Length: 113
Image 1: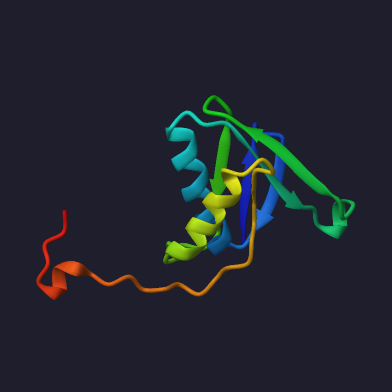
Image 2 (image 1 turned 180 degrees about the vertical axis):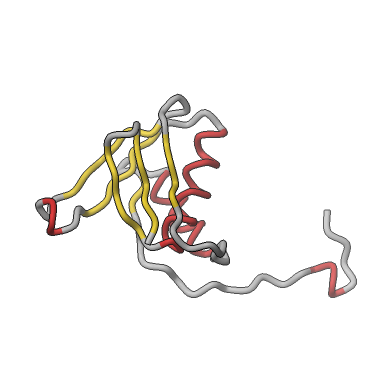
């Protein structure tokens, strides 16, 4: 279980695998100077509602992983999360789709660009 901390005030727990995917999408958007919202469902222990934070390049974020191993990233899940992040509703966790392997064209004798 990992923890997302926003501006040293708002905290949310996510599985390490989910948090690694969120971190990848969030940092990619912030590197491009894009602002957007992140929404998650709160745990029943704090009211069972939902929380939304406004992410922008100047905000303070911490991604705390409790596992020592970096999870493998699922490209299909990254694309699905990026799609939500680019939508008017902002980023939220969607179920992980199966990772569809992409052919490596270099192995087929075609040079990659």
